[in-house]
Amino acid sequence: MERNIILLAVLTLCFIHLIDTQIPASGQELIIYRLIESLCPGSEAEALTESSDGASLYSRLLNKLVECRQNQSGIFDPVTTQKPEPVTLYKTPKECLTATSFTESWRFDRAGQNHTPGGAHSSGGYACDMNTDSLDWFRFSSKGSGSRMLNVCPEKYSCGAAIPFWSDETAPSKVGELKAIHTYAVRGSNCKSYTKIVYAMRCSPDENDIIYKVRDRYSGLCGAAFCAMKAK
Image (cartoon, rainbow, N blue to C red; front, top):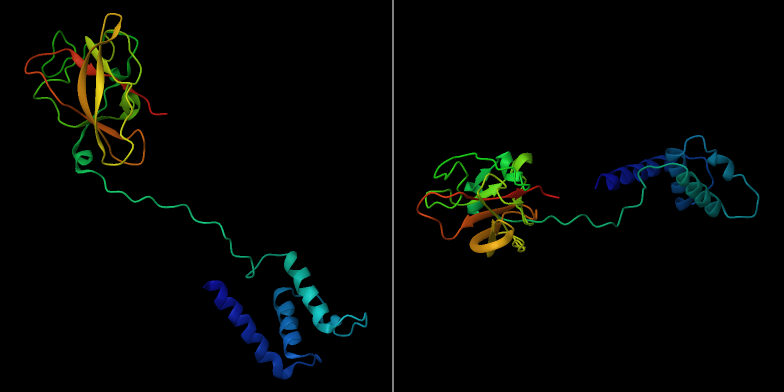
C-alpha cells in the first residue's frame, strides 16, 4: 500500500510539470523523463532528447530508466512471491496449565548414583511418585531434570529411586492427544522387570512438551520414581 501511494505521488508530480516542460515529447515519454529526474538525479536525461543515434526517444528514455533502476533500490523493488511461514494455532489443554513441574536435578541421574532425596511417602529415603496422594499430572522441566521422561534404561538406584522408571514408547504426536504408555521398572540388571501404565499428553507443537499421570498408584510407601532426560 505504501509503495502504491509513493508511486502515485511521483506520477502526479510528473503530470503537474507537464504544463511547463520544454522537452519535445509525448505524454508517455514525458512521464518516463520525469521519473528519471526524480529517481536518478544527475543522470543527464535531458541529453537523451537531443540524441541522434536513430533510436526513438521513447526507447532511449526507457532504457535509461531501466539502467538507472538497476544501480539502486527504491520504491520499485519487486514484490517478493515467497509465502510467509504458516502460523500454527492450538489450544493448550487445561491439564497442561495445572500440571506440576518436577525440577529436581537428581531425576537426571541415570548412572545409579543412589540419591536419597526423601519426600512424601518415601521408603528408605528414596523418592515416591506412585502414592495415591502423589501429584496428579506432572512434567519434567529445568536444565537439571530435563524436559521429558527418560527413554533409555538407567542403572539401578538412578534418579533418586530404589526402583527407577523409564519408557521407550512414542509420545503423543498431536496437541491434546491422550495416550497410555508403558513405563518400566529397573531392578538389578533387568530393565523391564515389570510394567506400569502412565498417561501421556502433548501440550504444544514442541515434541518435548509432554505431561504425565500415573494410572494406578500405591496406597503406601514406595521407593519408585520416574527418571528424566534433557530435550534435544
